[in-house]
Image (cartoon, rainbow, N blue to C red; front, side, top):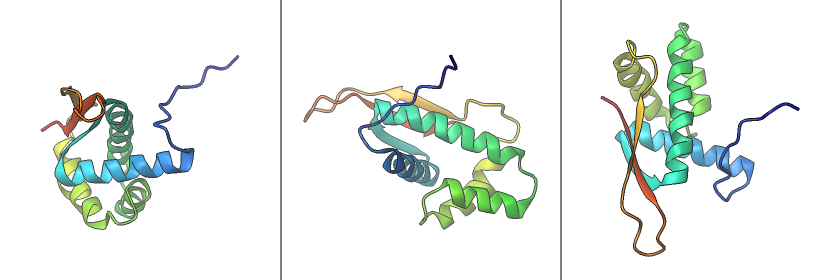
Length: 121
């Protein structure tokens, strides 16, 4: 029997989950820190770290632009430019550990566990 990697479902259908992660990643790369639920933050961490690692390996600039556009939200063109020109060079000498998740107190309204996710400088 082949083991598959478990992913959090986040309470949405697969297509909406993919779009949610793309939008969260776009926001994360735009403002460099977000506050969200712990489950979303943990999923976003793996998505963002895989994205940074993948785009670091791509040498062709045209392919890098296309991959960035594919992995970010459709309205994230300016964020993609910032990502390629600012963030990728920042992490050029790093081998993983680009994102950190910090626990916050629960939300008062519904008691949901919150976390702050931020890019490591």
